[in-house]
Amino acid sequence: MPVEIKMPALSPTMEEGTLAKWLVKEGDTVKSGDLMAEIETDKATMEFEAVDEGVIGKILVAEGSDNVKVGTVIATLMMDGESAGEAAPAPKAAVAEKPAAATAPAPAPTPVQPAAAAPAPAPKAEGERIKASPLARRIAAEQSIDLATLTGSGPNGRIVKADLDGAKAGAAPVAAAPSESAAPAAAAPAKPAAIPDIPHEATKLSNVRKTIARRLTESKQTVPHIYLTVDIRLDALLKLRGELNKGLEARGVKLSVNDLIIKALAVSLIQVPKCNVMFTPDQLISFSRADISVAVSTPSGLITPIITGAETKGVAAIATEMKDLAARAREGKLQPQEYQGGTASLSNMGMYGIKQFDAVINPPQGMILAIGAGEKRPYIIDDALGIATVMSATGSFDHRAIDGADGAELMQAFKALVESPLAMLA
Image (tube, rainbow, N blue to C red; front, side):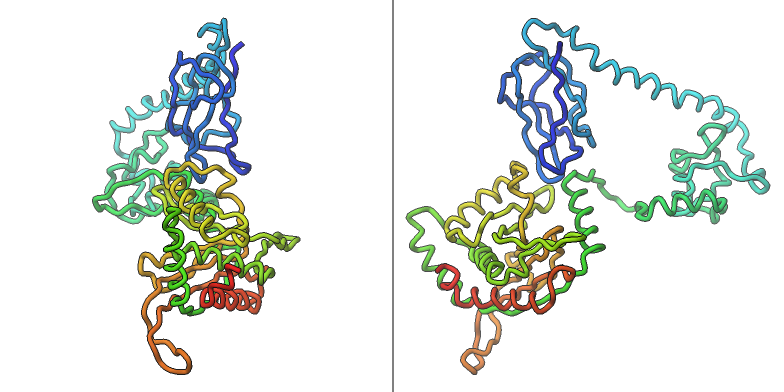
């Protein structure tokens, strides 16, 4: 009997994904460990391996299919001695749905004929309710299209979305009955904006972009942010970085300022454990290890690979690990455990010349640190005005879990470590 190949759960939170690409075709022989498909989850594109040995019988879900639920049968695998005919029962359910889908619009041509021949519904609409779908009414309202001037191609002359394509804006649309207009408004608080008549290109949202939108909206709507900013002198850290890079040159390791900042944030969180926390509706979770999620920009969107236990790692180890994680993040090759979790986040936009910004907390973490560019500024040095390399750092804190004084203590500890960096290497 054929073995069902099901959509796998490639992360603990995955409920559905996109079958981005098949790496095998029907009739191919596979063995355990062979790559069969690329699956796009909410954060990365991951490779799906074969578990059993056999021949690919039927591919039931085409590549490029979105919103494929975990557990859905996506293909069948024939074991030794089985023929392709034995794999046929699985796709019958999918085939059976097609006639039903095909017959659904079949009644439409019948009402279309009289509607096209008699474009007189407009006068009758003055005394009768216009038959239109809620979606058609909403689009008509957005584009100032008078439904009374249209003829419907839906069942019983009902105006549907397709009837509005190419329609010109005119008089104000006929008001819908309260019972119909209220429901769509309540069901769609985030209705799509009308696309202006300007040359443009529409790009389908990836699962990563959808997840970013959902999580950032959730964060700003549910997490009360408090922002604390400090200016930090970088000269000592830059000097130490130069000295360390000379010593590490033979090992092929080059430290970035970001690598040292990761270390400083991790040590700060251990020094101020009240900020290394997570808020839940009935508990405050305090972590004894600092796992730093570092924001990395990728072609499909932002992702935050994690440096686990950064407070105990040397800066050379952090630099090597971060370089590997960032490279695989841009290729969409991270494993779920490499980007899910973390106790706090770091976002550095200094390389873009951004002086200061407020980052959005990555739930359920309690804080995120935003790093601006280091630049020459007037600075008081030993009670005298001088010139120093200074950066602005802003901490965003979940005020439900972290009091302002505790956040200020963390920012103070972070500033001290960056300005006297040898302390975080001890």
